[in-house]
Image (cartoon, rainbow, N blue to C red):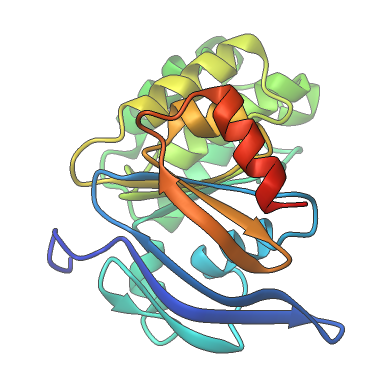
Length: 237
């Protein structure tokens, strides 16, 4: 483990393009321990590409990136053990049961007390009674709740959330609200969302992206939703 006070994300000048267009164009990004950062912007602004770079799912073309003090991509394997990623897809296997899915991920992360962790995780998301049912029999909301269980199973220090409320039922949304609110002093969250109200209430700092670049970033404290909506519209016009 690196120094506990090292930035969870420390990126400078990140660049990533697709088909001759820069989806991320010289972005700087920092997330400190205990901090929740929301990234907002219109479709095509580069939000998801930025998050996937931070999750080590995409390689940058230029710039520097370290996660929890590890240099990426050279030390990506060490960093990944402390990352939790949740996107539109809960990233679970439909033909496996909920229990089998979490056993697989527990094995990948080398969790010693896997059985107890899995039982606690399934109970937390309200799926313990369905633990031996195939995921393909679940509703969309239940599948997303299983994604939350997978996300938290190995107690990651950095949560990377890409439109995490998509498809969640009301119980799942409450679970995710609690998870975001209870970040803790040594953990952090980087969340991409199109919901300005959730960005304002669920983050300490908001970064507005437009056309691959950072248009502005500011703390959420002292900013109300009408003011935020107006500022967002001006920045992304």
